[in-house]
Every structure is written in C-alpha cells, then in structure tokens.
Image 1 (spheres, helix red, strand yellow):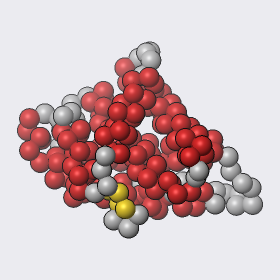
Image 2 (cartoon, rainbow, N blue to C red; image 1 turned 135 degrees about the vertical axis):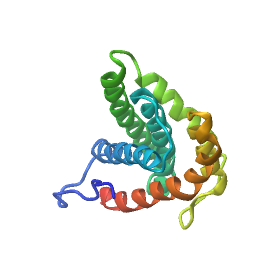
Image 3 (spheres, rainbow, N blue to C red; image 1 turned 60 degrees about the vertical axis):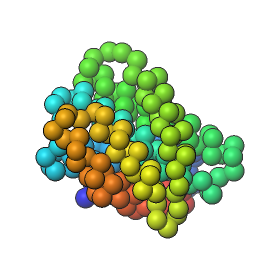
Length: 183
C-alpha cells in the first residue's frame, strides 16, 4: 500500500486551495508512480525512465479527473475552477521536475497540461457515480491511453489490467486520501 498524506497535522488551522491542491497533487503523484510499479510487477514492460514518465502522465490525468468528479459537489463553479487549476498546476510541477531529472532541461509543463486538458474532455463524456466510481467506459478509455504506450507483447492484456486492477486501486487510494484533506 502506498503511503499518502491523508490528514493535516494541525486540524485547528483551515487550509487554502493552494495547500489542499499541493497535498492532493503529491498524493496523485505517489499513486501514479505506484501504478507503474504495479504494472511492472504484473509483468508489463517499461523500457526506459522516459517511458515510465509517459505512463505516469496518463495515470495523473486519469487521477486528476477522478479528483474533480469526487470533489464536484464541494465547490461552486468558481471555486472548482480555481481548485482544479491549482491541482493541475501542482501535478504539472511534479511531472516537469521529474522529466527534467530523466530527460534534462526542457518545458514539459505545457505538454503535460495539454495532455490533462485533452484527457479531461475525453473522460467527461463518461459516467461517474459517487457509489461506484468511474464507469466501465471511463476505465476502458484509460486502458486505451495506456495501451497506446506499451509494446505489442503487452497490448493484448493491459486493458483488462487497467479495468480490473489499476483503476479500482486509484479510486480506493483517492477515497482514502481525499476526505480529510478538505476538513
């Protein structure tokens, strides 16, 4: 089980959108890294650090969308927009810092934000319920995005792995980590 920030040390202090988004982005990053490790443990092949980062980007985009769906009713539209902008910005910072470590200097932030915006639009077409989480269709689309990144040997089985194991694990971790961050 991945160690996540699930509560604030000082519960007496209210926390800003910036602080909450920072803690949640950190959790999403850890969930995404753990997801890639899970794939490797299940014998799916990653062939470089750059390849892992591409898969992590897909995990982050899916997780950001789930976080948006899970917090939808907590905010009015302006608050939601501000929070999600901050969350994506914080995730982009994690991604960019790690891409610079892997690939060297460059502007990785804009490409990541563009990916998240495209994925948010794709996932928005799918159903989500508070009780059941993402629909089969949303999980299938997530699987297709990851499938596009894998070699031919792994393409046949990755969809099932995403639907049956990876997406439910992301939901489980988010449900564990998110509630106390907003109190």
